[in-house]
Length: 103
Image 1 (cartoon, rainbow, N blue to C red):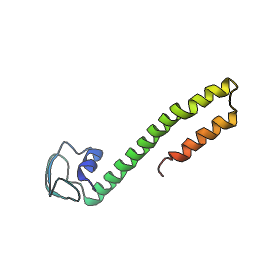
Image 2: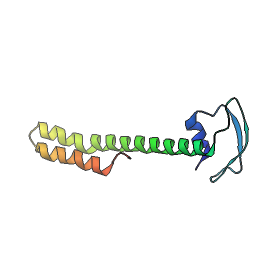
Image 3: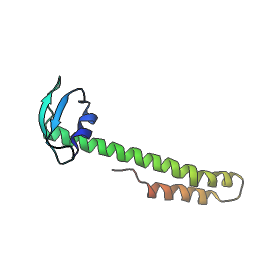
Image 4: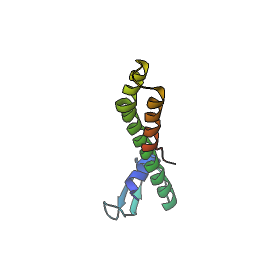
Protein backbone atom coordinates (compact mmCIF):
# COMPACT_ATOMS: atom_id res chain seq x y z
CA UNK A 1 0.00 0.00 0.00
CA UNK A 2 1.19 3.51 -0.81
CA UNK A 3 0.48 5.66 2.25
CA UNK A 4 0.84 8.90 0.27
CA UNK A 5 -2.07 7.90 -1.99
CA UNK A 6 -4.17 6.92 1.03
CA UNK A 7 -3.48 10.20 2.85
CA UNK A 8 -4.35 12.24 -0.24
CA UNK A 9 -7.57 10.29 -0.75
CA UNK A 10 -8.56 10.69 2.92
CA UNK A 11 -7.97 14.46 2.71
CA UNK A 12 -5.28 14.40 5.38
CA UNK A 13 -2.58 16.12 3.35
CA UNK A 14 -2.65 19.23 5.58
CA UNK A 15 -0.69 17.18 8.11
CA UNK A 16 3.07 16.64 8.17
CA UNK A 17 4.31 13.08 8.37
CA UNK A 18 7.43 11.01 7.83
CA UNK A 19 7.58 7.50 6.45
CA UNK A 20 10.09 4.73 7.07
CA UNK A 21 11.04 4.92 3.38
CA UNK A 22 9.79 6.67 0.27
CA UNK A 23 8.68 3.58 -1.66
CA UNK A 24 6.12 1.07 -0.40
CA UNK A 25 5.99 -0.91 1.75
CA UNK A 26 6.40 1.79 4.34
CA UNK A 27 4.83 3.00 7.58
CA UNK A 28 4.34 6.30 9.36
CA UNK A 29 7.06 7.06 11.91
CA UNK A 30 6.09 10.67 12.67
CA UNK A 31 2.75 12.52 12.47
CA UNK A 32 2.10 16.19 13.17
CA UNK A 33 -0.98 18.18 12.30
CA UNK A 34 -4.53 19.08 13.13
CA UNK A 35 -5.92 15.62 12.35
CA UNK A 36 -5.34 12.45 14.34
CA UNK A 37 -2.99 9.95 12.75
CA UNK A 38 -5.01 7.47 10.68
CA UNK A 39 -5.02 3.84 11.70
CA UNK A 40 -3.62 1.14 9.46
CA UNK A 41 -7.20 0.06 8.68
CA UNK A 42 -8.16 3.63 7.68
CA UNK A 43 -5.10 3.88 5.45
CA UNK A 44 -5.87 0.52 3.81
CA UNK A 45 -9.49 1.54 3.22
CA UNK A 46 -8.43 4.90 1.76
CA UNK A 47 -5.86 3.28 -0.51
CA UNK A 48 -8.32 0.63 -1.70
CA UNK A 49 -10.97 3.27 -2.43
CA UNK A 50 -8.48 5.51 -4.26
CA UNK A 51 -7.29 2.66 -6.48
CA UNK A 52 -10.88 1.58 -7.21
CA UNK A 53 -11.82 5.15 -8.14
CA UNK A 54 -8.79 5.39 -10.41
CA UNK A 55 -9.65 2.08 -12.11
CA UNK A 56 -13.23 3.23 -12.71
CA UNK A 57 -12.10 6.54 -14.20
CA UNK A 58 -9.61 4.72 -16.43
CA UNK A 59 -12.31 2.34 -17.68
CA UNK A 60 -14.67 5.24 -18.36
CA UNK A 61 -12.00 7.06 -20.36
CA UNK A 62 -11.06 3.94 -22.32
CA UNK A 63 -14.72 3.31 -23.15
CA UNK A 64 -15.28 6.91 -24.20
CA UNK A 65 -12.24 6.78 -26.49
CA UNK A 66 -13.33 3.47 -28.02
CA UNK A 67 -16.90 4.69 -28.54
CA UNK A 68 -15.60 7.83 -30.25
CA UNK A 69 -13.08 5.99 -32.45
CA UNK A 70 -14.95 2.76 -33.20
CA UNK A 71 -18.69 2.90 -32.45
CA UNK A 72 -19.52 6.47 -33.44
CA UNK A 73 -18.32 6.00 -37.04
CA UNK A 74 -20.54 2.91 -37.29
CA UNK A 75 -23.48 4.91 -35.94
CA UNK A 76 -23.09 7.46 -38.73
CA UNK A 77 -22.81 4.64 -41.27
CA UNK A 78 -25.95 3.11 -39.76
CA UNK A 79 -27.77 6.43 -40.18
CA UNK A 80 -26.61 6.54 -43.79
CA UNK A 81 -27.84 2.97 -44.34
CA UNK A 82 -24.33 1.58 -44.89
CA UNK A 83 -24.34 -0.83 -41.90
CA UNK A 84 -27.09 -2.42 -39.84
CA UNK A 85 -28.20 -1.33 -36.40
CA UNK A 86 -27.09 -4.72 -35.11
CA UNK A 87 -23.51 -4.11 -36.35
CA UNK A 88 -23.38 -0.79 -34.51
CA UNK A 89 -24.90 -2.27 -31.34
CA UNK A 90 -22.52 -5.24 -31.49
CA UNK A 91 -19.55 -2.85 -31.57
CA UNK A 92 -20.92 -1.01 -28.52
CA UNK A 93 -21.30 -4.31 -26.65
CA UNK A 94 -17.78 -5.38 -27.69
CA UNK A 95 -16.43 -2.15 -26.18
CA UNK A 96 -18.37 -2.69 -22.93
CA UNK A 97 -16.89 -6.17 -22.63
CA UNK A 98 -13.37 -4.99 -23.51
CA UNK A 99 -13.45 -2.20 -20.91
CA UNK A 100 -15.64 -3.46 -18.05
CA UNK A 101 -16.28 -1.30 -15.03
CA UNK A 102 -14.54 -2.65 -11.93
CA UNK A 103 -16.84 -4.34 -9.45
